[in-house]
Image (cartoon, rainbow, N blue to C red; front, side, top):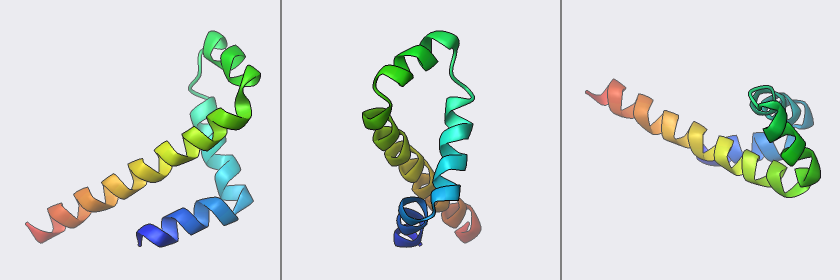
Length: 67
């Protein structure tokens, strides 16, 4: 499951762009201006955070189902 998430986000451009758009859409004007200046590095960091968040949610769901 975890490998699937990583592969899907890395290989599926539409999914990756949708996830980026959801995160960027939450930025303030100041945050967006900072993002524009260093978007390449921040995109990598954002995708790593999204992957980690999805993995954590899977663990939580598995725990809730088990109990």
